[in-house]
Length: 333
Image 1 (cartoon, rainbow, N blue to C red):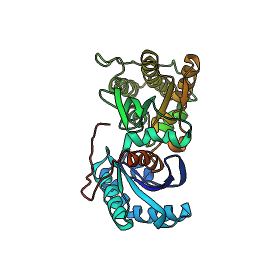
Image 2 (image 1 turned 90 degrees about the horizontal axis):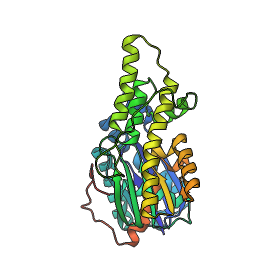
Image 3 (image 1 turned 30 degrees about the vertical axis):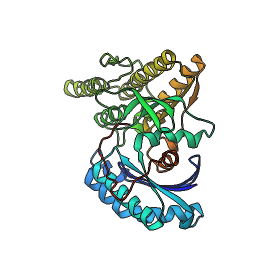
């Protein structure tokens, strides 16, 4: 089954064509990073307008690049929550029109479910059940993936997401937006024990996480150095931050895997592109004898192929929508 899928929850406009939830024919992405870099973060109104400007042309390009006819498409999938509400609305409205025009079912997909499904594209052999850590700019959660559409959140951040911690720390270190990749690159040139940073504990749930205190500690160190005229070891602070974030994520994830008896572990989302986190998970999984699945970098960030992958399984489960489908800024997994 060929699915046309749409992703517009933040600052990437993406349209893809996938087959049976496992094969990518094309994944066309227009990044708005340059548009928002001058502001140091995503401006929702600018993001929404940019989506409107490019989404139709991107869809035409996707069909052409896939080498198919529009009549061969069996469904249209769209990320309808969570995200910047104006941006999500653009994708949802385009997908509703496309499904109606093509005369095919419309399949709503939760954005985080899409990130988890990116692993199906990278690893065709992967099937539920497995444990997945979903880490991105807006979300950080440990998910029990019982089946393709049956998932339970075991733990989550109580405040900031891991990606938000990286982005705001990058800003105070004078690094460009988005901050994940620049911090990763800078960290490779520094010592990860240059600064002592906190590993906050969040509440009674051992799988919950917190990154607000860690972010504040980095900001305070940078401001203190500036105000007192002391030299700031930017590379060392970046390396220490990456180590701290990785410690928080790996410790809780491996504890869940051990205590709940998982044998397969997946990691997904934009923060899964961080080299320290990838290396630490590989080492921890190898030491514990777990099978580890981490998508290639191109499938870690927001893309439409992952929405098509999850959309296939949502379609098989009968999860389709009508022309009254709405967009949502927040929604439980």
